[in-house]
Image 1 (cartoon, rainbow, N blue to C red):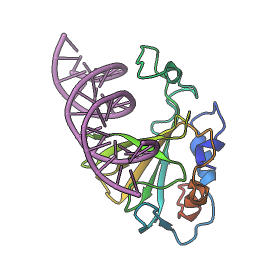
Image 2 (image 1 turned 45 degrees about the vertical axis):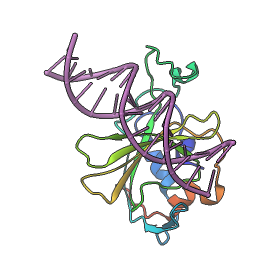
Image 3 (image 1 turned 120 degrees about the vertical axis):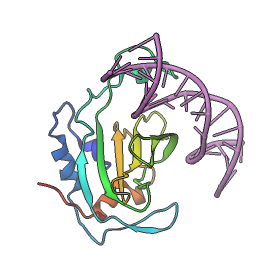
Length: 172
DNA sequence: CGAGTTTGACCCGCGC
DNA sequence: GCGCGGGTCAAACTCG
């Protein structure tokens, strides 16, 4: 399954440790196939796993129940976000879910834009941001927000499979 | 024709 | 209040 799924709820900042547990796996040749481009690229390392400034709120996102772009002034409680860096020549890691891009923004102090994706599965509110670092343009930072509450759309190419092929370097 | 992308406009929070 | 930066919307567009 996808990594945030196995996260225990209502836990503290140490969740990154849990995430790392999910990253443990068979580190084979580190080669991944990108379905879109049919190119091969190398994932040399997962450099770092952060939670984007740790937990930003509880699990529930109050405003999400309010229908269309209803931007009320309810306190925006964000879902926890999970970020990790990968070395890749392509920005999009095919993690088995289907994503639709809904925005792109230039980021300050970064010559690469940040891309915003939403899971297209009905009722699934999971988002992710993908951003290449200026500091090291071989590094792609992916930030996930939310948890998938549905099966993987493309089980033959899921995220766990990708993770299993990554070469992991945990700092612990 | 449906699904996904592009892109400018808009909204919102925050610091000054 | 204003400007800035980040996040989202939505119409137009592309592609299979």
